[in-house]
Amino acid sequence: MIVKIGPGGGEKTSVHRKHYSDDARAWRVAAGAHKVSRTEHAGRRFDVWLTPGQSFEGVRVEWQDKAGTWHVH
Image 1 (cartoon, one colour):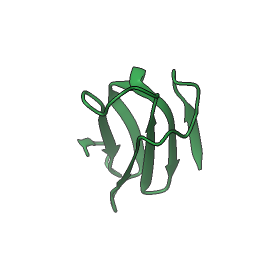
Image 2 (spheres, one colour; image 1 turned 120 degrees about the vertical axis):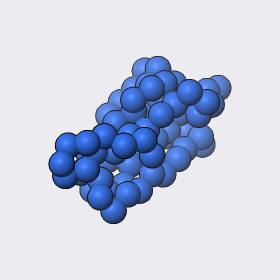
Image 3 (spheres, rainbow, N blue to C red; image 1 turned 90 degrees about the vertical axis):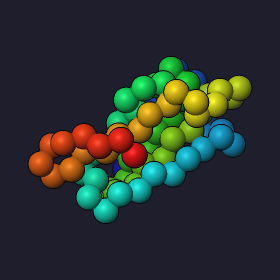
């Protein structure tokens, strides 16, 4: 598992989304990272927690396939 601490300090807040793709080899927050408190990447799953008081509006998650192409989730 890969854990990344964001500007929100790494807290696992109540505002959380789980992302999953069978073909995902890597994940990233491509937009709105300033709103993210923490991410966890475990295989084909990617979890994103927001900083308290933030919304997912403007947050974009992408996954990368085995060919290296990024896709919006």
